[in-house]
Length: 169
Image 1 (cartoon, rainbow, N blue to C red):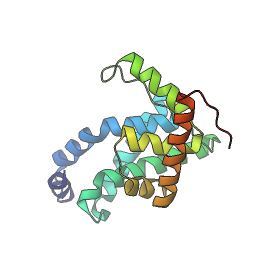
Image 2 (image 1 turned 180 degrees about the vertical axis):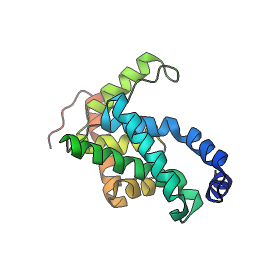
Image 3 (image 1 turned 90 degrees about the vertical axis):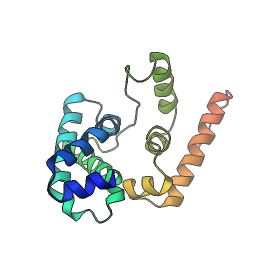
Image 4 (image 1 turned 120 degrees about the horizontal axis):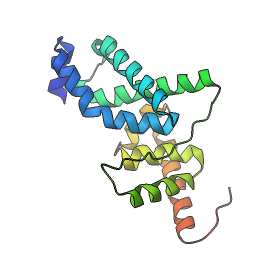
């Protein structure tokens, strides 16, 4: 990916297009988790692609392209939510029938829905997008310790739910 970023920075539009194609599905999943509307998701992704293209020269480390792009996407999604008057997005796994069976997808939605909203995003980014704690912290603008705490508490909630227990607080 780093070679493509270097080529794109030097003006190779085909390299930039390839970078976008490689990351479109991730962008869609994350935008859908925030916006839950295909038109808004398309707008957020389009705006993100344009922002990335215009600001590619400001990317300091080529190896962080995906993290940088996802941060821009999240900012665009949050901006759209602010304009719509919805401040707290909820995270829900979208249906991806070409990738997963319907049963697994439905089960994943239920798992995410059982979590407090503040834990849903970190779980989605950590397990579905396989981002590191450091990358999640950078994307969300929170400390790595906060990410670790949220992951731990989310796992505790999931464990209690799975075992039939109830979580208080």
